[in-house]
Image (tube, rainbow, N blue to C red; front, side, top):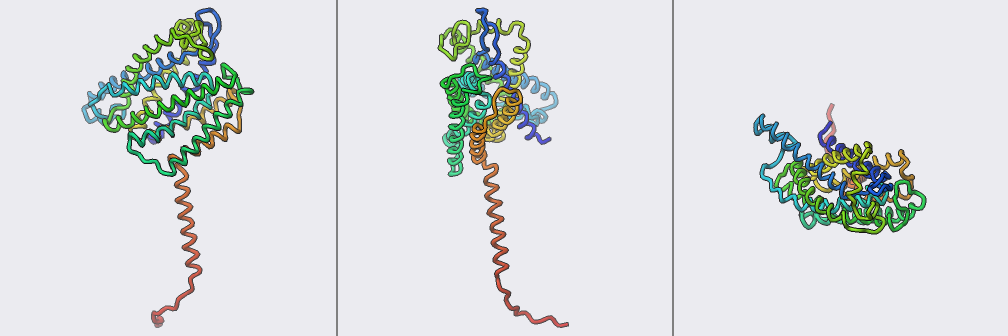
Length: 381
């Protein structure tokens, strides 16, 4: 199997597992510190586990680097996990860690309030802002085709948002609250998070290509800084009172850490789900940075959008959501814009159609041309 296909498949499957595990965990009613059942709503805890998984990448990098160094410098440089420059400034990963912390807390909160399929489809809005930020920081130019794609993706997002507000009346299996404002709030939180993610992806692409950073090492340092930043945020959110629908805790705060141990005690499936989420986050973020380095942020988002097909298949099979044709229409419009932006299909269709038309025109001109008399002498037998 081609290594590019393997990397893309690993990226898609790990991302799919992330979304499904988070949605399953957030639907669990477990006993809190007050003895009453509460949903497992801990966006700050999930963010901490995500950075813990990235920190494990740093340990893997050190182990692989030590093993490969015994074989000589050339073997170390040729290995895909350690390929890159040895000159690394850890502070360059401080800003991405801060942005990822805020974006992840918003994403996990939004996923708690909305559908898993809507969560993944709305994340396609990041490609719009990646294109805009790329013009400012990567000196890219947006052509008329890109602006048409951005308009198409915007129409798809609006369609998805409008339908989510309507289908909450009859499709509410995985929703904690069934009012229109709540699900719209969750969708808007995802959009705000993707604006931060778009800037994060462009920043990572610029620095990793310019400095030739090792993706697994950069992911490890993001994990280190992210754990520190999330720990500070956890202390703050543990004492901040908040209103519904964000107060699914015993004390009515944004993220109640006193509920965590009682909820995990004796719940083996919940613990295994969180462990799987941590490991899949390490793989997903590390592979995503690899795609940004050796390809582009746009291709990273294009590959990330593939997992929505797997999520759709799972939620329909598990009866988490009801198949809705209007939602599929919005998703089709969104995917059309994404494909148009990356010129994956439409440009090839245009070129093949133009070449076929030119061939047909050339054949018609030859057929209509009258035969001209030859000025050459006749052959002598």
